[in-house]
Each structure stands twice: as C-alpha cells, then as structure tokens.
Length: 297
Ligand SMILES: [Zn+2]
View 1: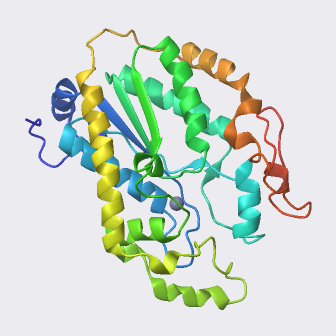
View 2: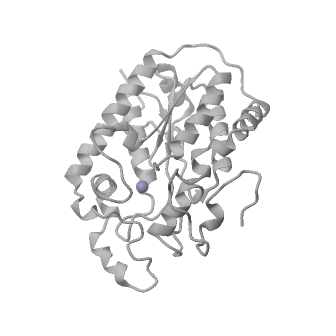
C-alpha cells in the first residue's frame, strides 16, 4: 500500500512528514530531464520536459518514491547537435534552453549528491531529450556508483520502448506523445506560420508529423510507463538500508575530475562518425567539437 499522501509525489509539494513517509516506503527518487527546444511551429517548446515529468509522476504514484524538481535545461548545440541544428533550423534562433555538456554533467553529479544526502538509495533519471546525451549521463552515473553504493538508472523515453516504437524529433512519435499528454499545447493549424518569412519554416518538425494522433501517443506513453514501472519495481526490491555518510563537495569534484579525463570520448562532444561537417559559415560551427577547457565563442 502506498503512503497516504493522496495523489502527491512531487518533492516540492510534500510536507516533511509526508516526504519521510514516502521515503520510508520506497527510497526511490525520479529526476525528469528535458529542455525547451523547437518541435515545429505546432508544438510548445517544453515537449521533452513534459513527457519526462508525466512518466516520473505516474511511476511514483504507481510504484512509490518521490519526484525531484524537473531539470528543464539540457545538453544541446554541441557535437552531433551542431549539424542537426544547421539542417533543422539553419541560422534561425531556436530559442532553446541548451547548456554545455560539462556544465550539465557537473550539475547532474550534484543532483545525485543531493538525492543521496536526502536519503534516497535508488535514482531513476528519465530524459525526454534523446539522441545520445543520455549516454554521457550514464557515464557520469557509472563513476558516481563506483564511489557511492546506490543505483542510478538513466534512460531516455525512446529507450524505454525500444523494439516497440521508434523515437524521433517532432515527428509522428513525439507529436503523438504531446497530443496525448497536453492536447492544449499542440496546434496543427500553426503550420501556416511555416511559410511566413523569418518564422524558421518547419522548425525541426518531423516529416511524418501529420500522421500523429493522440491514440498513437497513448500507446507510446503507456508502453513507456509500463517499462519504467517494471524497472522501478525491480530496483525497489534490491534496495538496502545501508547507511551512507553525507557526500561532500570534494567527493563530487573528484568524480568530476575523473569524468573530465574522458571528455574527448563524450558522445555530445563530437559529431557522429560519418556525420556531415557543419558549414563554415553556420552559427553552429563553433560548437561542433566541444572541449570543456576551451572557451567557445
Ligand atoms: Zn523532443
């Protein structure tokens, strides 16, 4: 039986006695990750965050645990993103909440620290922003787990339904998700803006977005949630009550130093093998190859 906090599972909405009641029942915290980036003229910017929040909150209500404040800033622009941006939005301002890889991963490690210090022993991270960045988050999580005896499980939503549905960017997959979750934040008639000068045209809308439907979105989201709940339940059964001393800043800085040693292998720091080079005049050119110690323009 779930602790009696009603339909509340958000850390930000829990009173201290409610928080401790839920924590005692299940020491899992969920971290929803997303960002604002264009998903065509037809969708609100926050699609990635909205789907991650929905999954985390539903899983916490079904399996137990607490949902941490969402992270609405994420890695974009750098590495493989640069050519993608050139292709999908050109030199138009995409109005994104992108941050550099090293900043994101550094903050991520401090988020993990905050969770463990608050008493959590299982950390489930759901990223609505997909495409490769989640691999770097897992690299950071692996180093964290080498030092701290907790479980950190990181997945993007398309990874939750691998073999069932194929993720995309603002195509049939993602627009369907948004149509199901927040129909008020989708307006297909806004495609009319695509032909207006200075609008950014399709603004990264997928070629099959017109095939999207709320029914398809429901199938995708329910499948994502089912998989997430299976994992959350499995990890709950593995939880131990081992005492962990509070993690200091210096431990996180030491993990970050180790992580930085592999910066040239980070997925978000370079183009995909074989990916076309960014044009020299593109506004995204400076981000194509990222190094944390190099101050990009
Ligand atoms: Zn998206």
